[in-house]
Figure 1 (tube, rainbow, N blue to C red):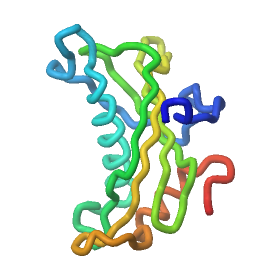
Figure 2: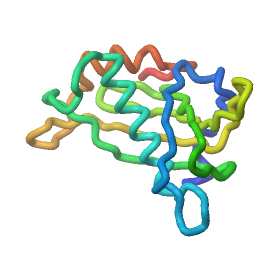
Figure 3: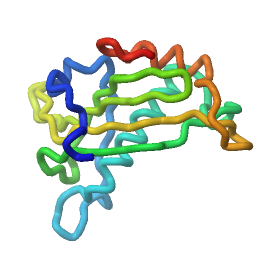
Length: 157
């Protein structure tokens, strides 16, 4: 699966993403080797996607009848991060379906003088399910409307 992570070479600069979401590293993100542990990158992606959705829609997405469950994630690590790095997560939608959203993500380190260095590229798939039955349902209108603003290329189906 690694070879398929964000196959679009165009998404390598911060300016390629419709939105940048700030995320800070924390002291306990560093592992025994002195850099941010690989699993923490996924937490940054999750925080950015859901934080952006909540701010953009003005809705606490946890209260909707349909919830986005993570069906797939992947990450290509390009350079290590360490506390106290300041980060920006680039958000784009590579596919907007009727029941799922595929996010393309870029994790950038703030490098001073407003420069952003790409540290990782990720992919994050939300499939929407009923909050009670866990059966697939349509993306809630608030979420679909927000996600549409992140669509790049021909990302709808």
